[in-house]
Amino acid sequence: MKGTISALLSLSLLLTAFVASAQFVKSKDLEKLKKRTKIIVVKEVPDKSILKQLRRHSHAQAEEYKQAIKQLNLDFPEVVRQFWNVDGVTAIIEQRTEKEVEKLRKKNDRSTIVMDCQSLHVKPSKSHYAKSAQTFTSDLVWKSDSKDLSVPVINMYFIENDVTKPFYIQNMSERFPDFLDLAVGIRLSTYVFSEHVDDKAAKAMMQSTSKHNAIYLKDRTLILCNNWLDDDFEKGKAGTDYPYPIKYVNYEDLEGLFRKDGFTGTVMAYVPAGVFSTFDKNNPSMEVHVPVVIDPINGMPLCHTDISDEMFQAWGYSLIPKMGKSIVGFRKIRNEDIRNFAKSMKE
Image 1 (tube, rainbow, N blue to C red):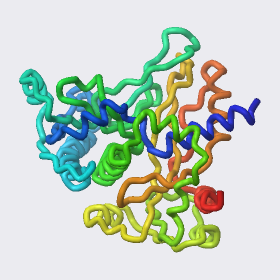
Image 2: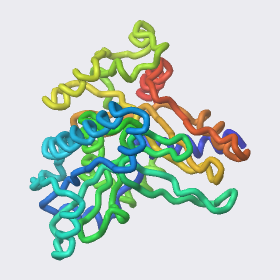
Image 3: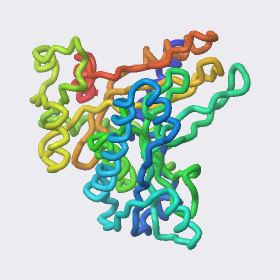
Image 4: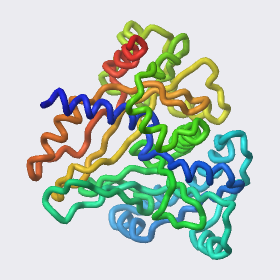
């Protein structure tokens, strides 16, 4: 039984990690996307309830939150201007408030895509165990609540719709989004759009026996961010386990590489986050972290580590009330992940 479930989980993880995304784009939406010439990036405003809660503890925490929102409003449109590239179509990038977007929606605009940073949640079930689960997005959460897990996403929707009806949702890491997360997110999503990875292509991937994208790791330098390495990570061992050069950079240096687009001859490890249902109303959701390697130039996911055993254990625990695991996978990159990356080139 475990072997069967683990195999299914591995297949699901492969698909999830392949796009590091919550969903594929529908064929009809992909066609509509190609005709859009304008992108509106929603300007975030500090949430009054979050500010009130933070001020109870510390005015410094409230100020940190306000500064993070301010920086997000600088980074988000800049990232979209630099990295949005779908089939060579140039789009006009604007930043607007939610109220301004609402006014434009009433003008019957059919030329605009709206992008909004939000948080993705699992909707709790009313019954004790549910056979299915729904996800929904909300205003961006500052600090994740252990009882209401969420991950930041880029919510993309056509302006004639609203934020509750996105055509695509791009996961990021579990952190409050910054320039680096946004850059990776836009690169990953534009790969899906440019390569026409629609819902039909998704089904084909699940059934395909074609070679793994890990072949593109060969002869390229693997970039590892020191800030994302596990505390027990051994660089010497990684150098022995991985057949090609490894370049270690600090977070600021990695951000600089993105700003300059200086990734020639390299691939990059990243840890996207997802949120899934446990089908248990007492512990409705769990975060899933799957270290992956991507091509930072075009956003192509190349391979991922194996967390099938972790997933199996999580699902097993989730069948027992009040014992569901809240975090599955690995938030940091381990030596075992490096071995898995190397192994994927031989499969």
